[in-house]
Image 1 (cartoon, rainbow, N blue to C red):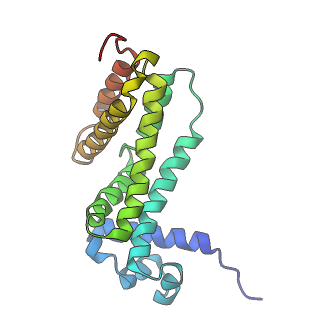
Image 2: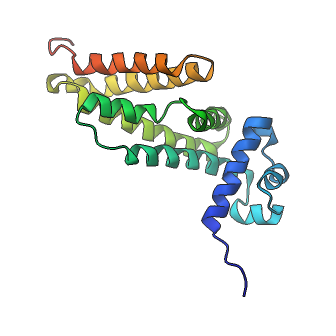
Length: 196
């Protein structure tokens, strides 16, 4: 009887192998041959899951986005909205090995997406996920009279998250980044209703 192959699990294994190649050898190293060797599969098997390099790179971004979203969904509900917001946003930052890998993949492929329309679409979808998360956090924390500034504040938070993530990858302590983020979230929740 032929062995059944879990195609979804195989695709995930190949994508994770592509992450390892990308982090070790850069985007230029993410070839069918290199990734197949890293994953321990035949090149023909890899091509069945990912017929083009663009499809493989897009899958790298998609898997990253799915994992971040799954971790956020799995968070227990906190009574304190600020604590809930901080926990959710922390899942997007490179605060441990897994999240550092994800952020490094995101940044490397974000550069490639500047000149690759297929990858650009996938990158934009992942970026919208973070944008929506930031908008939800701001909507939850910002006092009602200030919610007319929701879009501006969400963009501010999004930029802060992106900047802090980059700083953490370059050596800033995760605890320091979280302290900066916590202070910003606290300022949102305590914002004066008289402010513009």
